[in-house]
Length: 241
Image (cartoon, rainbow, N blue to C red; front, side, top):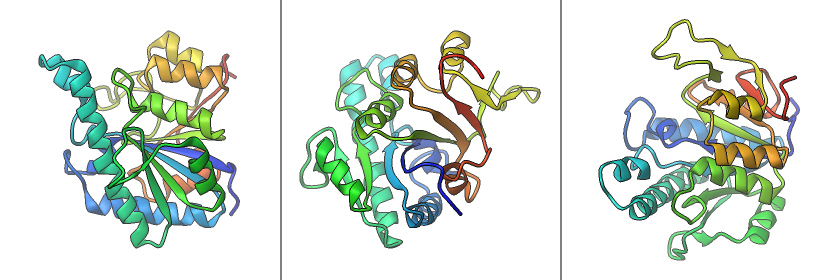
């Protein structure tokens, strides 16, 4: 088995880490992800992970209920740190060496985000987990994934969700929803598809960073995504090929 990509950003939504619980952390899901990542690392792939925090707290939800948006977003960033530490623990139990880097400095629990240090970790075969988003309110963890992918010179962003690709409508609400096999970033922006926010999509498009959207709930899908199997929706380029 051969990897298609040398260096990847794996974006894991908070909802994915909740598994079937719907809220909080599902330890079986964490262990399954760790086992898959162990196999990916064995292939020599350099792995960075950006975690969301929606399984614990969503800043936009707090804002919609009257909370100060900046304060709500900072709470969401702290939720991603909890997820990052849980994922680090699961990986270390599988003998995968990893480091958590936080965009909000908290030296007792994580390294501060330093680009050159992160690159050095990757060169040494360590998995790097990026927590606390960009460190700024009003930016999503999707934007964090796009930003870190550009900074780390990643070959691809693997967007791990609880759905097996990008659809023309919500497949949970519409059984006739059609899944796209391939899209351009302009397609996402023009059609208003809910893949990532416009800021993240524009950043990926400007830096020519491809995206693979796939279902992380299916065992082995992370490895399949890394090896280039057709398991979801591929997004790249300006014009749809």
